[in-house]
Length: 480
Image 1 (tube, rainbow, N blue to C red):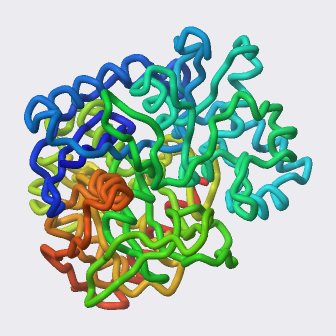
Image 2 (cartoon, helix red, strand yellow):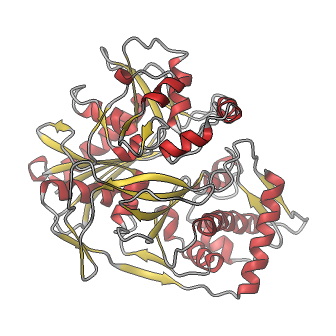
Image 3 (cartoon, rainbow, N blue to C red):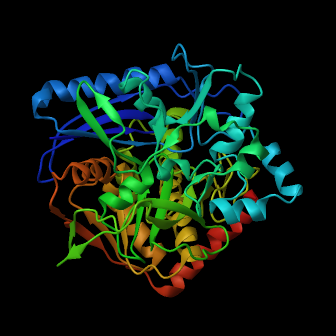
């Protein structure tokens, strides 16, 4: 068995996969979202650890510790934790990737002219989404003499190894605004700009390497959640793309092992180590041609996707469960002119406007909750259509994540993209990607075929697609 630790934005999960890549056990536990001020989002690091450890223990009890050969970790990425190196105690709540508290600082850095050279080094833009300004904000408010800063993978690794391992991998490091894509290391100029000491950052190891031991079991694969999903979807040929539907949506396109130019508003990020081998449509073991060789991806991030459905449930009380949305949306022919732009925490790619705010327009006395649900699902698909238009060149999109199981949403997505949308048999591709990397690292997985469960083909005309896209653009312009 390979264990995958999957630490997401709203819940922690642990999954066990057998040597054929089949999920044989799963445990999940939600944790608290803290909103201390408008636009601020925090997590309790100790609660994340307790939830993750509880799910790990539950899965181990099901499959037997003696059967586990390796552990892989995948995680929400840009979220930052600070803790005391001596005691291991958190020094503050974690600042979540959705948090907007450093918006003014990012704007100041832009006005000072820093963004072009930061983008050239990191592949990222100046936005409070990324970790750099979060670490800077924390370092100005906590005692830093013995402080450790890390993303969630590093925090969990520290806890799992009893403080013996303080490390991260390039896929997570490349989301911090502190990592140089060209040197594959922390960058001195960036560290100086954000006032971060190298000693307070983890060591960067290859994604597929041994990071430490948990009860004698090697932890030998770490990938940020979106890179793990890209890997799990086996999108290893340049031009292949996937979209993960979770709290947000993240569309990644594999770029290969050479850093090239990406379109305006699109990010460039590390995907995974080395090249991949294919034979007759099957992904074989990772092949490192030389130490430090990396593959890269272009990425677009939608901040609010599944979170908009959660808002319908928890904020408005319109639905009891997310599963209700499909039947409600199907109960009406369309949104009856209602458009929802869920810019609760600004807008991500390709707009990158942290000041944008959500809006609902087109309401009439005839508007029902079914129309609002329809508009919410359409907003998710429209935001992804924005990403695909910006990236260009994507012929088919592979999908995963919880909302990808919503047939109505997936058909809507294909209609608005104008290309086929492919859903695999197993949509747990984020966890599977982490497990597969760990399995490749120890030589357990020889080959694992990717299998399609359903392909959604576009069913609307080009004119209707253009009309709906233009209606969406007009609404977004009002939100910006």
